[in-house]
Image (cartoon, rainbow, N blue to C red; front, side, top):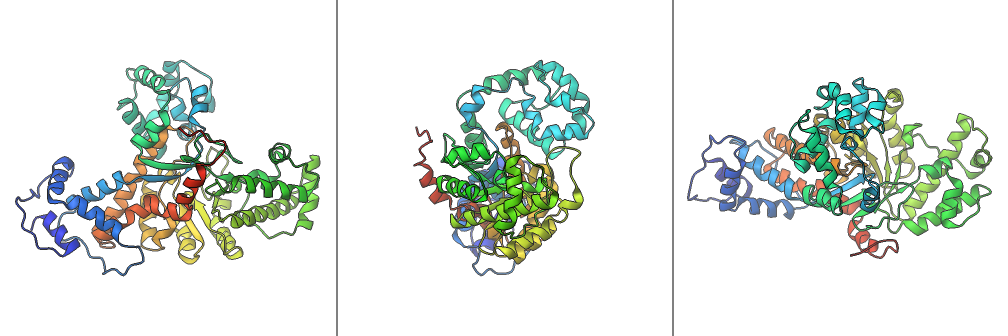
Amino acid sequence: MPYALDCYEYLFGLQLELPFTFDTSMQKNNTTTRRQALKSLGLLGALTVTGASRSLGESREEAKPLSASPAVFSDVLKERIDTTPMVDAHEHLVDEEDRLANPPKTWIALFQHYLGDDFISAGLDRASVYSGESDPMELWRKIQPYWPAVKNTGYGRAVRITIRELYGIDRLDDTTVPLLQKRFEESQVKGLYNHVLRDHCNIESCQVDRGPYTETRHPAFLLQDINFVAFCNADNVRGLSNRVQVTVNGLNDWHEVIRLFFKKYAPYATAVKNQIAYSRGLNFDKTPAEEAEKPFQKRLSGEPLTPAEEKQMQDHLFWFCVGQANQYQLPVKLHTGYYVGNNSMPLSRLGQNPAEISGLCLRSPETRWMFMHTCYPYGDELISVAKHFSNAHVQMCWAWIIDPIGSKNFLKKYLVTAPANKIHLFGGDYGVVENVLGHARIARSGCHAALRELVEEGYLSPEDAMELVEPLLRGNAHRIFQLEKKYEIAKTAPWGVFE
């Protein structure tokens, strides 16, 4: 039986006579021919409707492996993944207007975040990547000896995809670098963000962390998180207190600053975010205010704190901010796992993250915890947390370019282990908008590979796989972050510019 007919019968129980037959010897890269055939059959549309028609909780028959070549179904699945709008749940982007007011001068900007870390790890000195050098060819001469070592990493692949799609350049060498520079300069114009994020990436909206909170001109597209690291560390007390017009003389005053900050921005925020795991463990005790007052006063006066005092103050303020997040029904995003940068990561401490976040789930069951970056390289342990705790959610931001294959395998393991309504596929995690494109391509490709392999291995039926696409790319994010509500509120932001 031709595979398309077999697939149709498998999914819908229909007996059909085709006006033509499929050539089952077609090569996998001949996607145009198969898609045309599928469209004439109506299979693309039928599968798309079916994929959206059932809830994740509905009873399903046991999955069984395909009885014929999966090539046709693979194309249908890829089409569904590529055409589904995606919610981008984590970026570090400035507004386009700010980017264009002081645009990067050379293409090296694409190689700094995050690829610069791989260059340095490969042996290139930091100054060569992050210097003020403005001659494009001189920059290329500095990094060229290390390019073969890093071009195939996730960071390198994201950049290569970006420059291929945006600038039409397939390889980097002495002959193409001048063209890259020319096209990079030409792209720095109004509409850059729409061109990259909407036209190329098919991104519905982004959630941006430019902490503590940025009054973006585009609050319905570049939605903002409240970053509360500075509140926990009592950093920039004067600057933050000035934003809400409070004089801080003690811990109670700092509480009031936090309360007023949340009152002003929480209605527009999609979540709160904290990356304090870069400097300590995630073992936060519920420390009373009277124990945190003394270290807070020392911080105000500029005195050094002992490690014990630092922890007392941070622990108290962490839970105070989490309480505010709960009051405004905001999820709490926490950095877990791998560190950005070079030569500073204490892996032994990172290994404790899964146990520590399970403690957070226990201490605050009313909080919607969102654990970021798959806790790489401790993904299996994170899956166990998500499987066990109803308030634990997983965000795959950044992970796809840290370890593309590991992220694909993480998604496969997660989907057959933990509830599928608690994981979200994508966050670019970039400060340079162009590279979001490369990351988005890797994430969609990884999602396709994970779902296709689960079907081929018999863990999912084709219909199961199709049903998972929309929740993974956008549906789960819509529910967890209440996006329909946030979109409407964002339209009322007094700092927004609405055209």
